[in-house]
Amino acid sequence: MGQIKAPVGANKKKTIIGRGYGSKGRASGRGHDGQKSRSGGGVRPGFEGGQMPLYRRLARRGFSNHPFKIEYTVVSLSEISKAFVDGEIVSVETLKEKKIVKGKNVLVKILANGEIDKKVIIEGLKVSGSAAELITAAGGEIK
Image 1 (tube, rainbow, N blue to C red):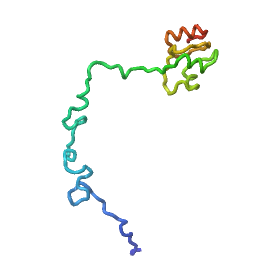
Image 2: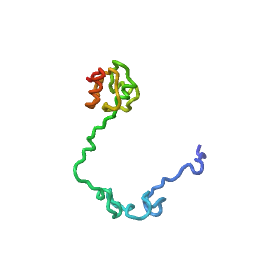
Image 3: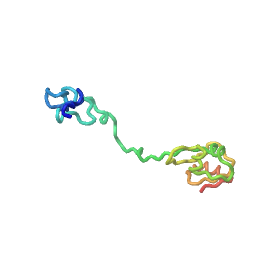
Image 4: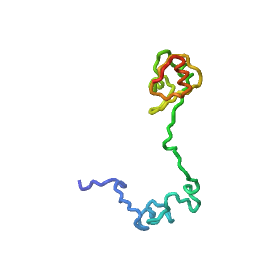
């Protein structure tokens, strides 16, 4: 039992880096000398080496409503006329089933592109004024 030894290379001494030139890897993963290798060194976020930074190059005046913008998926009357039959209900679910619109939280608006000759029932969708006139003229209704 006392004669059993581990094979050569099985037990290695732990390497402690960043503790002087005697250790392996003197820079401790920070590369070589320079501002970023120093303790507390580095540049602030957005610094571009003295070049005018991007956040100062862009004009930022006034107010933008872009984050609050509501986008609707547009569906034309001609698409509804092709996909639906008389008396059928047109809603977001039925439009997804017929693969006219895709996505999870989709907002749909019907526009008066094309003609409609079927009596369809529109439920829970936005409809433009001219599209509403064409739908009601064809005998359909909007709920």
